[in-house]
Length: 162
Image 1: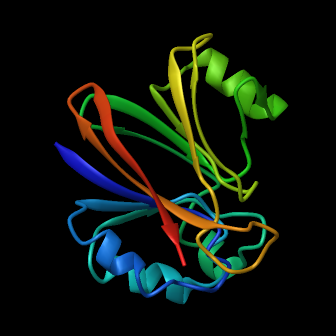
Image 2 (image 1 turned 60 degrees about the vertical axis):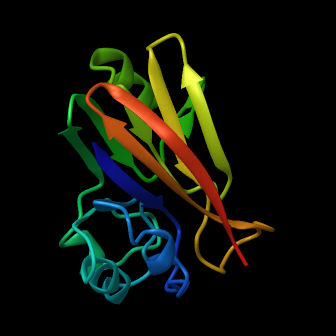
């Protein structure tokens, strides 16, 4: 079983409580808009980090993290990008990619709106963790913890940050 800490849209601010919330996670995944490379360095101090760059990220992030990332976590195919939309309102390019090769888990950020939606059309779970940073119009900052156990995505927890 792999325990994941998922966040997005930190925008140069890493809440000090995130480390405590992710202490029992095996990996941290960041769905873009880090803000600066120091956020990534800080997250990587405690856990392996996977990430993608977002629209506000500069060369420091873009030179290290890709726009899109596809990998297998246990027996689950994962696809992560920053701007992707959500079921059924994906961006056109992402929709095409999802239809050609549907993952079991699609992760995006950008909207600052937490969403966890199953897409029955492609048998895929979509997760947007909302925004963990202070910049933006969101009223509540959020992160997510969940587990992948073989082919099963489970134990999803939404954590609200003060």
